[in-house]
Every structure is written in structure tokens, then in C-alpha cells.
Image 1 (spheres, rainbow over the protein chains, first blue to last red):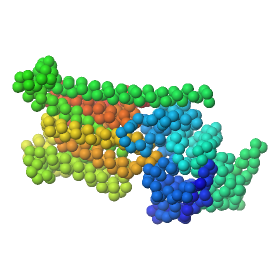
Image 2 (image 1 turned 45 degrees about the vertical axis):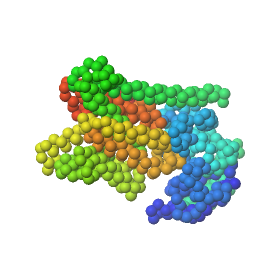
Image 3 (image 1 turned 60 degrees about the vertical axis):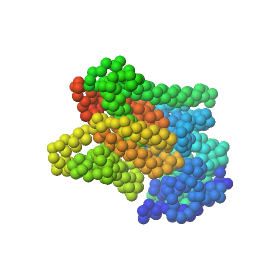
Image 4 (image 1 turned 30 degrees about the vertical axis):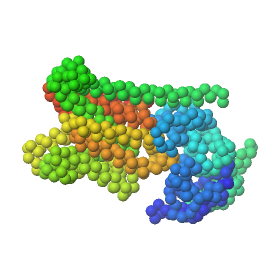
Length: 261
Length: 353
């Protein structure tokens, strides 16, 4: 049971972004890290996988079933793509927007949230440690707090596939560890497929079950973190040298450096 | 863990309290509606004693014919029209502001009202009717068709270019200026009587109220408000930005078009009935946003109610400034409304909702 992308192609105008991109099967219960330079097509890949963009060719299959067969609503139930925060300033509380993520597919006159919805929101607030600012308007929050609230939106939907675009970019060191651990734990417990686009290679190495290296619209290398990050594909993709080392605590550390010729 | 449990419960409690407060505000709004209506009916030229007016309202048959005519044929249709038009403009403005993610959007800034004015001016100057046989309703009918046409232009141009909020605002502003220019051109070649008529039309006046118009407006509101509310969650999601809303499963383009059509219809009907009444569609939603925030389940009804109350109060004010004279209400909404609005914004600014 897994998510698999096959031969995806997409252009913005005449600029090709995805060029026949395929992945190995990404099994449920595993956290995959998607790394790659700016502009390599990570967000476009996510949008295609979530059905927000229609690829020119190729398929996105979940558990062997082609997702393009689903209606947009059904697909939105199965796949949730969390884009990078755009900083919309709006008078809604953290609680409001997490509840909203559960109710957004609702259409009809029963406008009140059910007790089950409320319980789900409470559970996520608990899980992410948001209680201290759950009643505050998101317009008054820091970038990191907003990011946490957005992750709350992702978790409360209980999708089968979670695509997170740099979910830790605005977080402090402690929160980065907390959030990655929470995401990994949720992935295991709910048996879902999670793909996290991330720039911090050490964080990727530490929390991901596998790493996908993206370069120029294709997956250049994929596999277990220690293997992939040691591969020449990483240094070629970023044009850096990569030094890997296990810390005294046994954590895999990644040190990229600029090579002087 | 144990220490955070009560805090999570607090968050839910906050949410419940906030909802209860917002619901209470809706109810207070309904009471305010009734009060504003009563005030509007009670006050007017003729200096009728309040008791007589109330008795005539309750028992039209038993009252003197003069009283009955004043209350039932003159004051009540106008007072109800004020509420209905206020509600239509408020809901229209609230919808436009939400789908365009712009607090300055309303039937005026998007050119719908300006187009209605062109339609009315064409009828006044040339006597041309878009609908043959419109007879005495020629001005109203033309205004409606032109307003609807403006909405359609907006609709198709944005359809052509991809419906982004920015495109719609830009097209709306272009429409506004074009229509204003056409109206100016028509004014330039009209005679004195026609010019007076156009100016009077542009000002917006509730004197054009009638029971039929009140009925049509009430029906439209009764259909439109549920139409908006059943999309309440999706509309709230839209406030988080197009991409997030789409991720949340909202069909953003379709939702935007549905709401655009509904808001245009509301605006077209209200402008064709009473002329251009500015500012209400802007202020009502703004007051609602300050009172209940942007959860559209509360925002939309409160914006509707607040706008209706505002226009009703403006209608009362238009009668008391100079005894015996009823000023066109468009002047009142702009003159009284603007300072009121600015003081409101200044006093509430910075306070969280």
C-alpha cells in the first residue's frame, strides 16, 4: 500500500518544470523527505500530486488506484497539500482555522460543528502543543506559530497522503524537532504516506525513512537517508561537497560545504 | 501532558463563548432592525403623534383614511425599502469583499452601480428601453439590465483571463470609469429637465419605493442569504488564500463565480430600484467584521443586518435634518456615514475581535 508517481510532466507556459518524473513506491507509514534546490519543481510536484495542477502526462496512484479518477472533493479528502504560508491576515483564531480544515468540504445548512469535529480539533491542539495561543487570531501570531497552526490543519483532516511544503522553515530549533517527530509519529500511527519538502539535510536525515533528491524536474536519487545523502547525486544537485558523520549520540549529521577548486 | 489538558479545554470554551457571543450579536441585530424600522415609520413630515402611527399600523381599517395612507402607502414601503436595500447592498458588499479578498470591494467600486446609472441615463435622455414595453418602469428596467450586463462583462473577462481577485478588481475599476464617462457624456447632451432627473437618480432615493419592489427585494434576500450561508465554510476557507482553500477541497473558481453572480444580482436589483446609494455595502460588512470576525457563518448575516440598520437610520436622519424635507438618502449615507465610519475604525483599531 503506497503512493507512486509515474512519468509526471508539467510545463508553466513553455518552461518545463516536471520532465517525466517518477518515484518508487512510497509506502504507508513512512516519512519521505523531498530535497532539492530552489526552483527544482518541488512545489509543482506537490500541486500535481494533490490535483491542484493537471499534469500533461503521467499518473499519481494511491494503493494502486489512479487518483485522477476521483472528483476534486474526494481527492481533497485523500490528499492534503500544505503550501508555504502566504501570510493571509484574517480575523480567525487558530481554533477556527483548524476546525475549518475539517469542515471545508461541508456544503449545506447544518453550519454548526459536530462534537466529533470539536474533539478532533482539541486532539490536534494537544498534539502540537498549541493551547497557549489557540484562541488568538492568526493575524497576531508569529510566523512559526502560524506554521504550527497550519500543520494543525493538515493533521486534523486525517488524509491518506500528506504533502508538506517546508513545514519547519519558520520554527525554532525545539519546535523543528517537535514538529518533525509529531509528523513522523502521526505518519506511523495513522499509516499514511507523508512527503515533506525540506531544505535542512540534517533534519531530513534524522527524521525521514527515505530521501528523494529532486533536480531539474526529475528524481535524481532516492532511498534510505544515509545512502542517498552520501551519493554523488546530492553534491551534483547542489554543487556542494557533502560530509556525513554520526554524532556521539548516533545521529546522522550532514555538513554541506563549498568546494574550492 | 496533564497540565495542558485544561488549557485545550479552555480553547474549546473560548470557541463556544465566542460563538455564543456572535449568536447574541445576530439576535441583537434583529432587535435593532425592528427598532430602526419603528423609528423610521414613526418619524416623518406631517408630525403625526406616535400613538396614532402605532394604532394605524396595528389596525389600518380603524384609522382615519389620511393616517392610513401616510403610514401604509407612504412611510411603511419606504421604511421597509430602506431595510431591504440596506440588506441587499450589505450582503452584496460582504460577498464581493470575501471573494475578492479586498475590503474595498462593493457594488460601487466594481462598476455595477455606475453601469446602472448609464442604463437609467439612457432611458432618461433618449427614452430608449432595453426591454420593450417597460412603460413607466423604463428607467428601472434599463438600470437593472445595464447593471447585470456589467456583472456579465466582469464575469466573462475574468473567465477569459483566469479568475484571480486582482483581475476582477482591475476590470471592475475600468468598468467604473468607463460608465462614469458615458454618464457624463449623456449628461452633457441632455436638456435641463433630463439633467435634473439624472442627478436625482445618481443620488439614490427611497422615494422610489413601492410595495411591489419591497416584495421583490424581500424574496431575493430570502433566496440569497441561504445561498451564501450554505457556502459559509467554503467562503471562510477562501479567506486563507486561494491555494490553501483549494488544498482544503474548495473549488475556488466555481465558488467565486457563483458568489459573483449572486452579488451582482443583489446589487443590480437594489440600484435599479432606488438608484445609487453608496457606502452602505462598504461600511455594513466592515462593521460586521469588527463585531464578529471573518467566520462567514456569522459575518454574512451580521453584515446584512448591520447594513439594513444603517440604511434605515440614514432614512430617519434624512427626514429630521430639515423638518418637512426628505433629502435623497444617498447624500445622507455619504455625509453622515463617512465621519461615523472613520471614528469607528479609529476607535476599534488595534482591538482584537
